[in-house]
Image 1 (cartoon, rainbow, N blue to C red):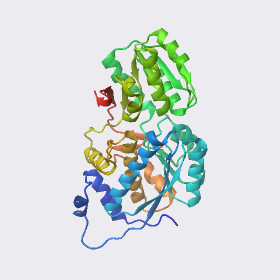
Image 2 (cartoon, rainbow, N blue to C red):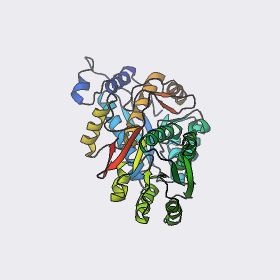
Image 3 (spheres, rainbow, N blue to C red):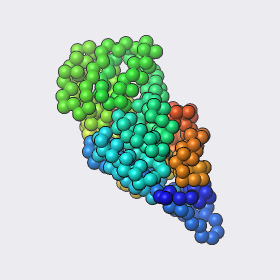
Image 4 (cartoon, rainbow, N blue to C red):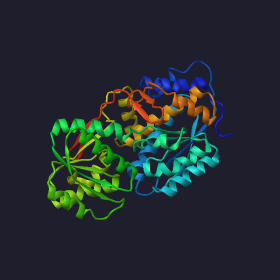
Length: 383
């Protein structure tokens, strides 16, 4: 058996370390009891994009966040080991990675951040009776659609988008908008659908909606049609590569509308260069958030990797702590027991705020305050 009986105290200790923001080795050691403690090895499957177009913006930040959390938990006395499989940024790669991990007999799989890939890969884990936990996938409703072994820590679009529209509308008072979205990507479709609902509820006119398909090479036709309408705001619903190319092309064509791009990160801002200046995004996490442990996470991440933490790294970091807490509460390596413990997670402190699951395995961050950021001098700055 790959995942064996776990030292309950060890996990409890590690989780307490997160709650009080302990990330330094000396601080954690001071909490250890007298005498030597041993813990059983816990092996968790990791399925993230390490190659392909989703690696740099999504997969590698997730892996870094998971590895940092693993290091902290192990420093506190746990013995967590990873078995990693590269999803290769494709649906087939994600399915193969999840199948390979299921064949290894792991009791939990963490990863698969792209909703379109998750929709086809996680049913494999569901059928095998293995917990599948995505740190960042956020297309609305996917966990409930697939089954009771599927959980997500990402802030779903039906929570993020209405909050983002409310805040940006209050700041900009826009009346006419346009939307461009990827009509074969589940996340982008979900963002578009939630924008439609939120904008209609706030009596904002959607003058034009244009679509494209993932990895499009030319957005001229869609953006020219949008430019002719001259909207106050252009909403962009896309994954990282297309998001960046749309921002660049919009400015090349002379579109002066304010760009609002959900889930824009500093990675896309850097890739878009000066074209991204003034673009606005909304998100559920910021490096300067005052949630307990967040500043320690930011400092530890920068120390370990010499870069600023990405939102996807923060969500992955929180995910491993949530999973570790559930394994501790389950007291078993049985995936059904871990599933039941995850489902009962309530008010668990994370760097994104107190965390619970709804009945469908979707994330609930209590009292979430959607963060609006603007690109200023080449960096996202909180408004």
